[in-house]
Length: 50
Image (cartoon, rainbow, N blue to C red; front, top):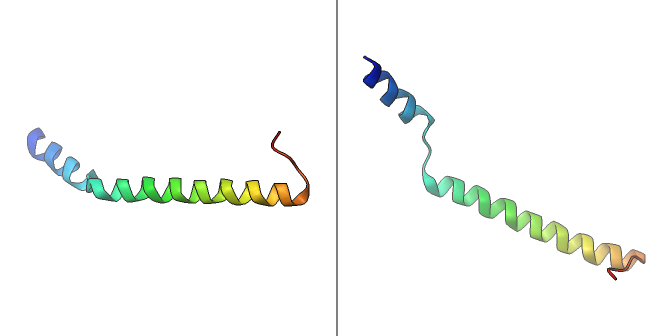
């Protein structure tokens, strides 16, 4: 009985690995775009990075 329940729980909570890859890629792409935009914007307002 526990074996059946354990398999059922694992099958419900599992997701394909490519899904997490796309989530990670999307996060880091948006992060890099945001940081790049912030850098250009802040330099145009008068801040410096030095």
